[in-house]
Length: 431
Image (tube, rainbow, N blue to C red):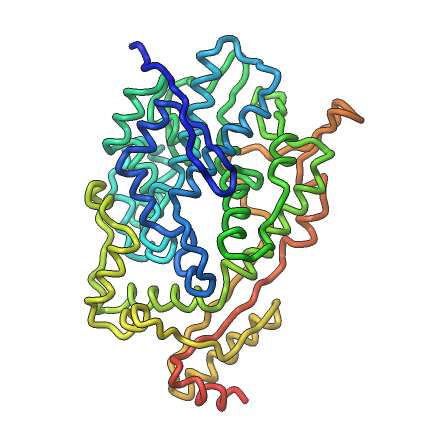
């Protein structure tokens, strides 16, 4: 089938400047499931402590698409593909995966996932049945919704009509649980699916590279500033003896990588785990788990498309619940204890028991911050190579830097919350 002509255009972005997109990508950007992300804030309730943080998943997704394309170009700067069509397909595929990686997010991002149905209800056909069998009756995640939207909605038809690959190929870069059943990612003797998936989800992916800088910009916090351009320009690839092509960075960018990982940790401590936004998330959780809550996210994808932050807020305004009322009236629960580290976590448990024994209802919210995420099953590591001073030297990134050993077990603050009218009584009990 003849593909439509590709005409470039630009989208202006305050973080990356001009983001170039072609006409085939525009058909996906304009698709209703992607446009839905305009109504979902990137940081949930964080706009309450940080009034500027009103940016959306839509802004972020465009930025991730842009960075994924740049990272792809850096990794394949020597043009190793046998033809232009192959390169164009792989580049489009990774950019679409980056654009669509957050499609399934619920209202207020992670805060409303308690209202999601069991995975079984989504009926996702492209999943490897053996990989998902153990969680079919567990609550679905936003990633499950993303895969369902990519492969079983009108968006899937848009991808099939405008690109030289299937929506399942895009979905495979988002989730390792997708079974594509063909050799699309095999190019010659090399398997590219690992590198392309690492550009979407890894410890040096386009997602983190965008959201750290973007969230820092919109919150006004400077902890997330990192040298994205240097990291991207020093990305490359490594081929292991099995022919798996993996993401790699040059040795000279290792200090920038360390700074990037520390920035992620500090943003978690100072922004993502801010006491006020966590208070609202906890109240929403209390409402979602209460007997009076009748808010459920639909498994039907067209119905799900109509859910966003405004949809949930409209529901909360009409709900007969103390927790819903406190959210819409900006009357959050208050902190009466904050502990840091392992000892602080133990003290959190003890003080929670003290307050509960005194007849005061309290919420204990532990929080952990790490710089190193868990590698997805079957994925190779990110490698560090030295192209300039020691060609041929290769080692996994977690062996090339001490940053993981230093921060892997770092603990964030744990907090104890009570109703504001009971704060004085709670503090008296803890005195």
